[in-house]
Length: 260
Length: 246
Image 1: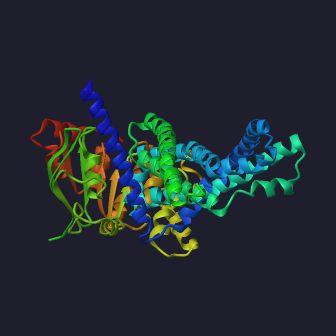
Image 2: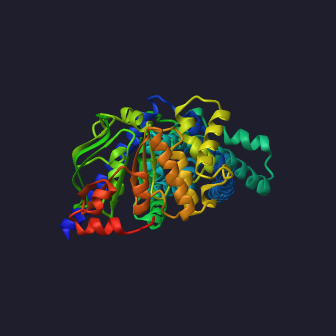
Image 3: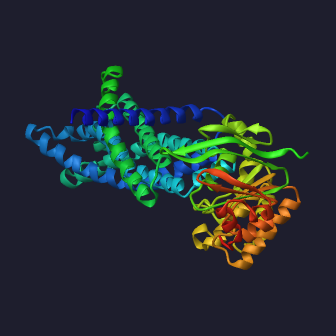
């Protein structure tokens, strides 16, 4: 029993190590020529722009819900005036980045895993190599970079629509004006609240891209394997995002004490 | 004496403990046709993938134009691959782009030709395999045989010195299969070295100057079609008498 647990732990650590090395290799190759600007732009469009409706709608809904919860809590202390600021802090520092990352992990992580997995089992990755194209650079590096670039942008969109949702809820309940809402919302928010929290999502993008690409490149067992890759991409990306978030929040608290 | 375009030197390869290639050696002179025959699962496709460097041997070496592809770095290997064309058993067309763009893909990646010239070359290659009207179709819209022909057009896009073809006539009707055979013979006459994996013995006889039969990971017979017909191995004689297609 103990031996089996030990073996499973070692296998898990070996897997994490392999993914980590895969990601490091992607980062190293990303800075070396030749650069695949067109492919990166195409993937930023696919990953970023096509995820915009998802994150915008979710952001709006989250803003409404957060506003209602914040109101319910702050009303007890007669601090309704703090609702916009409370919502802004919660949304920009934590909810927006984390929710965006998990949404993108679901939509994009599964897509990358399935697409590359299908290419692997149908020998399209080998076909790329056969026509003298570096498949790792062409398929993996471009997607990972696109995830890194798109995630902070999508987070900003989630934050914006979250604030908008908060305003809609607040306006419906208390009739607060647009200008007053945003004055109060940003009264406690500083640039350093926004920047580290948003930039940390680049790490989440790296996680989503790396895991999707790694699992895609290592897919076996035909279409069944592709399905498994797709599911595992989402599950493992989500777990790693949540765990990594703990470390990143601690790091931000150390580096930006007042802003974390 | 003609220089060997391809040379396998005592290549051994195992997958999951099972030896797929066992001490395989052969060479193919420039401009010649070489056929790899054998039952399914005897390592023929694996041999082709060794030649283009998609698989590295556990032991032994593979030389292409005198360069040891088993020890080349990525860039040098890419340079060697640019001089080769590879038709996969299942064509392996890129399914997110059109048939024409599949053929144009290597040209777009490795030349700075204008778009019009690239499209012209891609159309010409598709015409060579009878797909001149299918440039804009997606791979999913093609039949298995058409995919195979499109894959061959892509493999020929760069006028390769060496063409590796894995079961070129599988899934094709007899007339189209004959046309593909003629195309390969024409390419050989123009100086292209061709290695064909096939179960189609008449096709192999037509295209290849020399044949080798793989069995249990080893080459058990090698020679011209006439020599193999009189081989000491029952399996080889049976194989050569068959009319197996595909």
